[in-house]
Image (cartoon, rainbow, N blue to C red):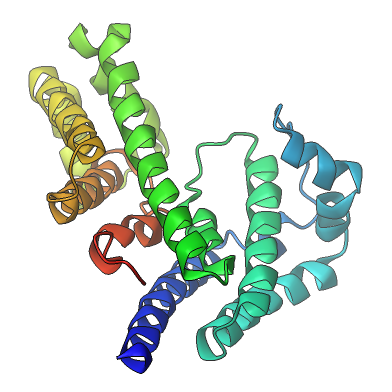
Length: 269
């Protein structure tokens, strides 16, 4: 029985690591790896002290200054993810977690904003604990953080002025797809975007739908019975964001997978 539980919880961990590996590989293929930052200017580092540490030590600045270092880090991050997948233990998870934090700090500093998905980094944090009790507690904390993240997002959307302004989402959609319009792109997403820009009531209806998807996470504070349904709603929310607003879901899908992979009602994982 103990051997079965060990295999079971290791399989959960490996599935999470595999999802993170796939997401990071997609980043690389999409052209947002370290090598794409080479010699790029930084706009700001924000007010998060975590960023101050990395930038104070000149780590991101050095990475973008030397393309060879950037290339090595691209391969190193993918390599450590593979090693963590094959040789699952706390040490390799720790190295991988640090490399992903470094990538996230460098990427968001380069972008100049913080709305890039952070789930692919945070999802590995609980796996760094050796004790099953601590690991389970960390996953529980992460689950509640996800619930708070999306519930508060829905509340802020509802309290904002844009919810009852029929032009709000239409204006955002126009800005999001402006490069596509300039390039005369006639893809399916562009056509859908153009339709919603012209029919603002339909766009507003979709905004309400997005808020409902997000606010549905609130029920998770009281019961875990509907975790899989919450996970489906949140993944659908991100996929529709990509379809309608060109906001990539990659980076957040791995962390949402814990609603499907982690048996929160079990004593061990």
